[in-house]
Length: 243
Figure 1 (tube, helix red, strand yellow):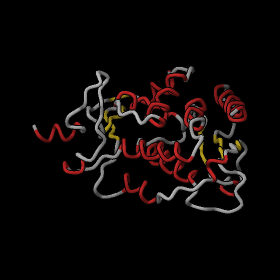
Figure 2 (cartoon, one colour; figure 1 turned 90 degrees about the horizontal axis):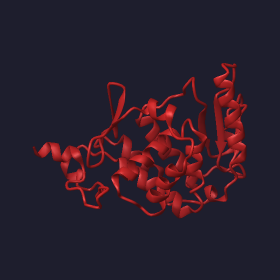
Figure 3 (cartoon, rainbow, N blue to C red; figure 1 turned 120 degrees about the horizontal axis):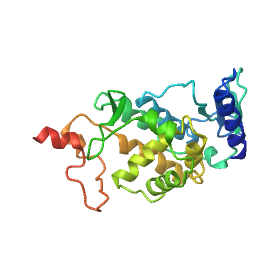
Figure 4 (cartoon, helix red, strand yellow; figure 1 turned 30 degrees about the vertical axis):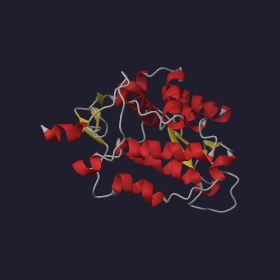
């Protein structure tokens, strides 16, 4: 954790001072692995984060460091200068879930991209209500105190919260974790067991899953409002289709 924060601060300061620098920071989850194994859960975490961030069209930026998760030392590019060794044994543990099951939530012909883009804002295709947010504004102005972000990760991952506002806060953490060390740490610090990694992967993947058909929409999570009332139907697109 200290290593990531130290390297991140240095890179961020170089960017702010307009110094030429390598903006990529590589975080190796399983540096002690002797051989590659696609069933190790680090692959699942990397895959789901990459899929969600790609769905939101997140790319390398000029104004923030670019945080990249890797599973093994052999994955580090030769030209890399900023390397963090996470050294958590949990990422050496194995999940029986196939990586294809995760990618299918995003790549299958029966699903939509979970996000759409309207006048510079990002909108969700999943969930009980359509919301819009400016990711740039949130990233540039987000609170450096990550307690509320960590709380949303804990609620969704550890306790399986289906409160939609809580999940949306969780999504912001997931998106910002590509550029913000505090948001990435909010995720990695909660990955303390194989069970929690699995919960993270599937609560995130199933949460943003955006099937095209009404029939499959009914298989989405049953979301809860801040008033603790259940949303019916669980997907706003299904509601609009019925009008």
